[in-house]
Length: 225
Image (cartoon, helix red, strand yellow):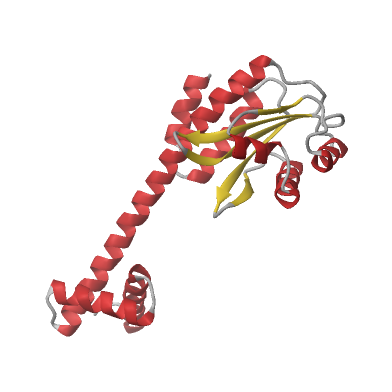
């Protein structure tokens, strides 16, 4: 089943669907899991993502607000965090009470990492005390490893596609300037970069604006006779 999951994660087209596949697999594969979610690190903030239930998003956000909880410890200390019973665990009293009040009694939190890059945490929740076994921890850890590798792959693909799209639109804008101003390719690119610096605008943003304006003008002219 884990081998099939690895193939499924590899086939996902973007980061969002990759994350969704990870939490869905966690509910199916890890013994004792009732709910799951992923907390991502974005600009030094921990952001809840793809929760299987609203209560997961609430509890993940609460950890951020309180600056305490199993997910944050998993992220900061780079290990698996387990709670056998949120109603009696004393490590994070405020968060533990909130979890218990919502019917979450058992917790497993796994760091998602590749080498030294910390991506976030996979958070698994059970609706009964002491529901997670050694098997749950082993399968959860393997799933977290699969998920982290898939996340890195999805991010790299997205960055590559974005870079290709940026290069394409810059090339289009350069071509427009070459034709409009009778410039060489080098001179057109120099004009773009100088305008970018003067306007304090990213080069790709300025290029996209030129292309959009050109296409809007063609639309106003109507189709050729």
